Image 1 (tube, rainbow, N blue to C red):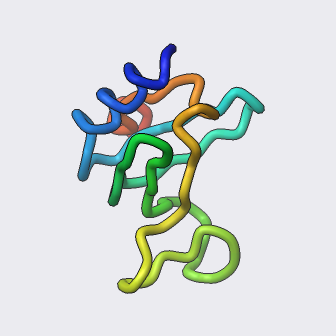
Image 2 (spheres, rainbow, N blue to C red):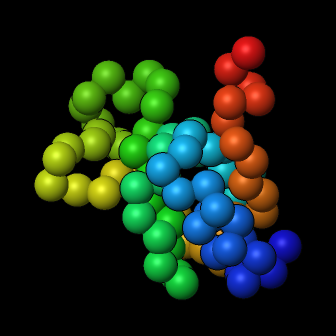
Length: 81
Protein backbone atom coordinates (compact mmCIF):
# COMPACT_ATOMS: atom_id res chain seq x y z
CA UNK A 1 0.00 0.00 0.00
CA UNK A 2 1.53 3.36 -1.03
CA UNK A 3 1.85 6.29 1.35
CA UNK A 4 -0.68 8.28 -0.70
CA UNK A 5 -3.22 5.45 -0.40
CA UNK A 6 -2.63 5.13 3.36
CA UNK A 7 -2.98 8.91 3.81
CA UNK A 8 -6.24 9.00 1.83
CA UNK A 9 -7.62 6.03 3.74
CA UNK A 10 -6.73 7.70 7.06
CA UNK A 11 -8.51 10.87 5.89
CA UNK A 12 -11.61 8.80 5.05
CA UNK A 13 -11.54 7.22 8.53
CA UNK A 14 -10.85 10.45 10.46
CA UNK A 15 -12.75 10.43 13.77
CA UNK A 16 -13.49 6.70 13.53
CA UNK A 17 -12.00 3.80 15.47
CA UNK A 18 -9.56 1.86 13.29
CA UNK A 19 -7.18 -1.06 13.49
CA UNK A 20 -3.74 -0.18 12.08
CA UNK A 21 -1.19 -2.90 11.32
CA UNK A 22 2.43 -1.80 10.88
CA UNK A 23 5.12 -3.47 8.77
CA UNK A 24 6.86 -4.66 11.97
CA UNK A 25 3.72 -6.56 13.04
CA UNK A 26 2.50 -4.15 15.72
CA UNK A 27 -1.24 -3.59 15.82
CA UNK A 28 -2.75 -0.33 17.08
CA UNK A 29 -6.46 0.17 17.76
CA UNK A 30 -7.84 3.63 18.37
CA UNK A 31 -9.74 6.66 17.14
CA UNK A 32 -7.94 8.82 14.56
CA UNK A 33 -7.50 12.29 16.09
CA UNK A 34 -5.05 13.96 13.68
CA UNK A 35 -3.50 13.31 10.27
CA UNK A 36 -0.76 14.86 8.17
CA UNK A 37 1.25 13.55 5.20
CA UNK A 38 3.84 11.89 7.48
CA UNK A 39 1.95 10.79 10.60
CA UNK A 40 -1.42 9.67 11.87
CA UNK A 41 -2.34 10.05 15.55
CA UNK A 42 -4.80 7.80 17.33
CA UNK A 43 -6.42 7.89 20.74
CA UNK A 44 -5.81 4.30 21.91
CA UNK A 45 -8.62 2.04 23.08
CA UNK A 46 -8.13 -1.06 25.14
CA UNK A 47 -6.02 -1.81 28.20
CA UNK A 48 -4.02 1.43 28.45
CA UNK A 49 -5.92 2.31 31.64
CA UNK A 50 -4.97 5.97 31.37
CA UNK A 51 -1.33 5.33 32.32
CA UNK A 52 1.82 4.42 30.47
CA UNK A 53 2.40 4.25 26.71
CA UNK A 54 -0.48 5.60 24.70
CA UNK A 55 -2.02 7.62 27.51
CA UNK A 56 -4.36 10.20 25.97
CA UNK A 57 -4.86 13.63 27.50
CA UNK A 58 -6.88 16.57 26.26
CA UNK A 59 -3.71 18.51 25.37
CA UNK A 60 -2.30 15.74 23.15
CA UNK A 61 -3.39 13.94 20.02
CA UNK A 62 -2.51 10.42 21.20
CA UNK A 63 -0.03 7.94 19.74
CA UNK A 64 1.73 8.99 16.53
CA UNK A 65 2.30 6.38 13.84
CA UNK A 66 4.42 7.05 10.75
CA UNK A 67 2.41 6.75 7.52
CA UNK A 68 5.32 4.85 5.92
CA UNK A 69 5.21 2.20 8.67
CA UNK A 70 1.55 1.32 8.08
CA UNK A 71 0.94 -1.95 6.24
CA UNK A 72 -2.86 -1.87 6.54
CA UNK A 73 -5.75 0.03 8.06
CA UNK A 74 -9.34 -1.11 8.54
CA UNK A 75 -12.33 0.08 10.51
CA UNK A 76 -12.19 -1.53 13.92
CA UNK A 77 -15.97 -1.85 14.26
CA UNK A 78 -15.78 -5.09 12.29
CA UNK A 79 -13.60 -6.59 15.05
CA UNK A 80 -15.82 -5.60 17.99
CA UNK A 81 -18.98 -7.51 17.01
